[in-house]
Amino acid sequence: MRPSPIKCALCSKELPLVASHIVPEFLYKTLYDDKHRFHQISTDPTKQNKYKQKGLRETLLCEPCEQRLSVTESYMSKLMNGGAPVPIKHAANKIHLVGLDYTKLKLFQLSILWRAGVSKLPPFSQVNLGPHEEKLRVMLQNGDPGRAEDYGCIMCILMDGKKLLTDLVVPPTWARLAGLKAYRFVFGGLVFVFVVSKQSPPLFVVENFAQPDGTVTLKLQEFSEMQYLVDTVSQLHSLGKLARRQ
Ligand SMILES: [Zn+2]
Image (cartoon, rainbow, N blue to C red; front, side):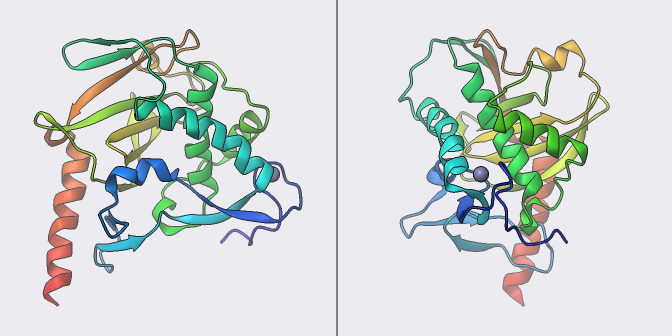
């Protein structure tokens, strides 16, 4: 177990820490029901799927660091909610966005990955960044988004037939993408796949990452074709049913 935090995980200063979300709250927004709860799926077979109050919080950051990261969050939140309109080009099963603020978008992505890695909360236990954790911390502290291929992230829009699938949260899991280690996050109707490796991913992977020229391609991903999600959800669904019967 990691020791309890007394220093800010980002700037290492000994300042009062604030309870912050590992995954920003706006990404759960669509998941809240009228009682302000969201459905969180548990991958722990001993735990029943249950409603949880509020998003998962943890004391990791000092107030100034929390504020700094929240700038990238509000950019992403506006982008996702139509408050920061950007030109969109639709292709068959893809959406191309142009005119993005690469720095803010990339730092937003990196902050989720890094926070999940630093977190001691059980849903993030599969995210072990090893030496990349410190590299990510330095990038975040310096406001350095890196190159496209540095901890790039493929974002997919999760579809269920013709509808957006927004009511699903799955704890991040690790996988291999083009032979490299990757972490998959699902929330807010999006799948985020981060490639975390010393090696640069092949071009066909890199071209799906956010680019420094402010462009990004989002793939429309049919839920039923996303095998790992289908497996996780059907498995959890049956576990949930079993738990309810007991
Ligand atoms: Zn700090």
